[in-house]
Each structure stands twice: as C-alpha cells, then as structure tokens.
Amino acid sequence: MLEYALFLGCNVQARLPQHEYATKLVFNKLGAKLYDVKQFNCCGYPLKNVSSHGSLLLSVRNLALAEQRGMDMMTLCGCGFGTLKAANQLFREDASLLEEMNVHLRKEGLEYKGTVEIKHFSQVLYEEIGLKKIKENLVKEFSGLKIATHYGCHTLRPSKVVQFDDPFEPRIFDQLVEVTGAESVPWEMKLDCCGAPLWGSNNELSMELTGKKLDNAREGGANYLCSACSYCQLQFDRVQEMMLAEGKVKQPVPTIFYMQLLGLCLGIEGGELGLDKNHLSMDGLGDFL
Amino acid sequence: MKVAVKEDTTAFAKEIQQKCGQDVLTCYQCRKCTMGCPMAFKMKMKVNELMRAIQLGLREEVLSSDTMWWCVSCETCATRCPQDIEIVEVMDVLREMAFKEGYYIPVESIEAFHKVFLRSVEAYGRLYEMGFAMDLNLQLKDPLKDADLGPVMFAKGKLKLLPHKVKDLKSVKKLFENVRKLEESRV
Image (cartoon, rainbow over all chains, first blue to last red; front, side):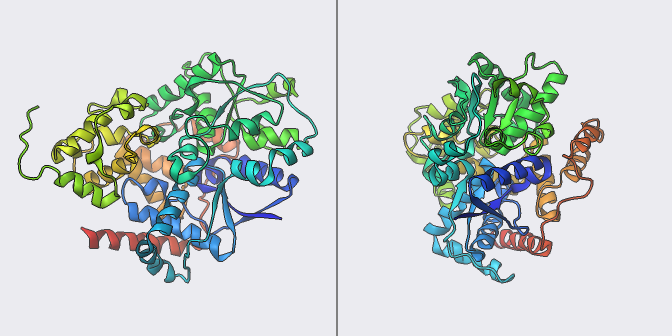
C-alpha cells in the first residue's frame, strides 16, 4: 500500500483547509494512505532570501521527521516541493553540510541520513497510482469543460533538481486533468509566474501579473483554471475575487484545485471537497458533469 | 558608465561562486534570461546586465541594484540559461549579502514582508495569517489595510483568530536561535 507523510506547508493550513480534506478523501478512494505529522514546520522557502542556512535547517528538520517515521513525503504546494527537493539534493551531495545540520538536529534527538523521497501530489497520482487506476475509479466524467492548466514555477523548475517533467513542455498535470474528461487548452502564459510571490509586498504588481495570466487563459478558451500548486491556486482564487471587486477583471476565470476536480469524478460530494470554501463560485461546474 | 578594469575584477564573481557554487563568469550575454523574465519590465538593471556587472566586479552597483528585489524566483531564467547558471541562487545570495551588509533596499515593502514572515514562522513554526497581516500593516504604517477582508475570510473558515502552532514549538524556536548563532559565527 502506498503511504506518504503529507506535507501541507503553511498556506494550506492557514488559508486552504479544503485542500487538506479534499486530498485525503481522494487518496483514500484511490487506496493510498496519508499520514499527518503535526511536528512539521515551515518548509524553509521564505527564509531563502535572508539566510540560506536557516532555510536548510527548516527543511532538514521536516526531512528528519519523515525519515524517523520511515516515510516519504508528499506535498500539495509547488514551493514546498521545490524547496525540500533542492535541500535534499544538497544534503545528498555534501556530507559535511548534512553533518553541520545534524549537529543542530541531534539536540532534539533527530538525525537525517538522506533517505527520504519528496513527491509532488501529481507525481504520486501519475507515477505511483497511474492514469489507468484513476480511470477505473471514476464514476462520472466531465464533458465540454475546457481547462487552462497551471503547474507553478517551483513544481517545474529548476528541472534538474525537481525532476518533475519537461520544463518547457510539461504533460503530467495535463494528462491528469484530461483523465477527468476535461480538455486541457493550450495557452501561451501557462508556464509564467502567477504573481503570488509579490502578494503582500506589492499588491498592485501582483495583480498585474495575475491579470495578464487570466486574460491569456480566457483567450485560450478556458472555462476554468486548474492549478497544481496550492499557493498559485490561492492567488487565482482569492486575489481574483479582489480584482473582480475592484473592476480589474471583467470576466472571471474561476479556478479549481485539482483534488476537487478529480474528487467530483470519483463520486465525492462537492460539499465534502469544500467547493463552497473556494472564493469564486464553483456552481457552473455542474453544467459540465 | 565607464569601468576601469584593474587588479582582479573577478573577485566578486568568485565570492559569489564560493557562496552558492554558481560561476557567473561563464555568462556570455545571450540575454535569454532577461527575455524570459516576467519581472524584467520593472528592473532598472536587467538580469543579463546584473550578470555582466558581477563579472566586472561592480560590487556596490550590484548590491544596491533593485534587480534581485523584483525577482520572484520563478526560475525561468535558470531554465533558459545555455550555460546552466542557476541564476536564482545568485539572486538569493545577493539578497542575503545586501540584507546583511545593510544596503538600502529599493523596494521597501519587500523587506518588511520578509522580516514579518520570518517573525511569524519563528513564533509559531508556521505562518499565522492574522498576526502576520496585522504585523505587516504596522510595519508599513497602514494599520487598517485589508481590514475589511478579515470578517469575510473568517466567515469562510479561512482566518483563525489563534495561530495553528507546530507541535513541539520549542524545537523550532531553538532552530532559529541556532540559525542566529550560525550567522553570527559566519560574519
């Protein structure tokens, strides 16, 4: 049986509780077990700018906690995925760096040896569970639903570190979306930044980047956006709602988290998947099911 | 700007290489980084120009530039780079250096954001949304910014009045103490 320590990161716990329970319901249906590790801390990403070693220490503590439980980690957020993957690679290449980290970890009875693998949820779905098994479990499929897929920067890049998919022509997440019967439409700005890193520090600019992407997705013919990263999902959902209120977006392109999209096709109720917790209305989705 | 090339102008590039392993000296100015950069339109010194400035040893100009403060770390530049320079790692190191050496940070709100985010992680192990928002507003001297969003988010179950603390919070605090000691010993 597939088992993973579920790494939620800060955003899901603070702002997107529906992602946590939608994920657990979907993986339960597909026969994989996800474990909570309450001791997990921040992935280290926000510390990178100020202290690279501080960032690595936060990462290594998470890795050590997973290793202690003999489990690999699965992430819901692209940023957490990229940060932990990069840190893990460094520890595997540089034994003296890892020892430097372990000096600190030993103070609380932890140690990291470098055995943990980090997977993005879409890798687990695509590589471990497989499209075939997902398809067998579907009880309904979308028809006529056009989706602009969004991977998120740190899910894809740097590709040598994250080893996720082709960084210029990724297909994994598109195939996962298409297995639900939806059509993944081509759009030019698919791989661009969503604007989320600027939120809080420069909201105007953040909205400018988001607005460009939304326009582009709409021009591509998309009814909905679907993001492989929780952080980007938050931007397209919460920030788009604010932009609508301010008249910065004329016509919305609502966004759905992948676990919710797949969950609906697996026969899980919208309420259980927390569709009503999304900022933008998901009511129109029913027309395509 | 005229640059007199004298002594060892590569010292700065080597300092960066020693800190993050990236050899900026291999950049040959193809400009693919800048062409793909979603933030280039904001930067006074574009990414390729920053690389050149590092090569020329223009430490002051580089550390006081706005380039790395606009960078959103999307990794597009690094993915496009034919010389495989992990440019974002260079940006991280430059931000760290500018921060530590007390350079004026041209995008003021970004510095406040970083500081406040860290405080939240240090105190609770993870981000505490409401405390974070209030702290940031105080830092930016705009205490009621986005205050109207609070009740809406609370109604949707998105805003907790109390933080989700990490179990075993002491360890995270210890970790931060260690980082501080580590940083001090390095300076």
